[in-house]
Image 1 (tube, rainbow, N blue to C red):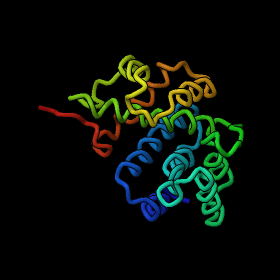
Image 2: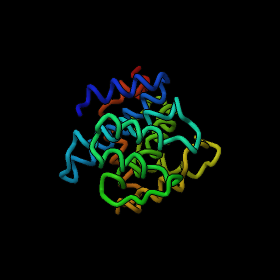
Image 3: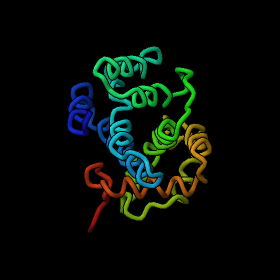
Length: 187
């Protein structure tokens, strides 16, 4: 298991540029949390990168993430990666039991809201702060597909105050802003 092979698997199953960028954003957040918590950065990063790799081919609630987890098992990915994938959505009823599971759940939806908030700012993610993201959270019409409940629940399960969590993930995504198309207008 290495990052290059994981990225190849992601792009084999995913054509959507926005879904690939989402995977990269979640990977960045997961790597940052792994560093902060003294965990295996490569393992956590690959888990973030692959958590939705099956979504484009299997978008139904009955299939995602079950199909992807089965594919990862078949390919010999570590059980903790497969388990985290299964637990990153409440729809499978798989309890999040370890830090990696909880971090993946906490980072996943939040990256979508951060991305949306960055895209409507001339400065992109450059100076985005938790206050702005929290304001957008209150607007139910903004990025309506993003579950505010999951964002709040994710921070709680991870044991991190929400604004601190938002700022931490923003900073992680800021590190790859160009790759995510979130660098804003520099003029």
